[in-house]
Length: 117
Length: 142
Figure (tube, each protein chain N blue to C red):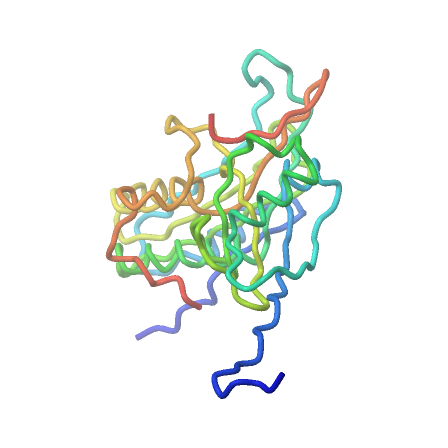
């Protein structure tokens, strides 16, 4: 069958670098993976595939990062992205409770975007 | 204008020398150097801690620590801050983090130092596992 004039080459899968830390690393029993996923894959999709492989991950709380910046689970990944499922950051000896970072109401907006180095 | 010393902002597996941080932030214009030590407590929720084991996403942690020092530079111009955070095993009584801020006056020095430790706790991907005499546990927001 001849190709129509509207033919486009199929996009290749995206190659994602996954790195694991703290409890996620211990439960999976490894520090990193390189995996390929179909185009349009989100961070939540990858987490779903990990929980299928390792059901004890179910119920863990995390916040994702992409290329060392905090992101959202809906983020669609690009080829070469480095993704980490970041557990809540350690609490300390202070009075304030441990917390997820980047709650917008807690961040001084004067500084947003200043951490590109 | 005087030349600023290089910024001290890093992760380390070795014990932290607070004097190194003080030297990195203090100038002759300063009337105050505020130093915070976050240290490992023996007792956690009525269990005896043997030591803490710190894990980090190191590239992002250092990037976020630098971003916090950038925030200090904007918020308190004319002050300098330094952060050193330990990774790996930290024994009871030892410092897991030391922060130093050099300032013209004490009020802003305390304020900036408090700001830095609070922001580190919010933003920097470092986790600790408490290792007890009878087990271990990752500490997460709860």
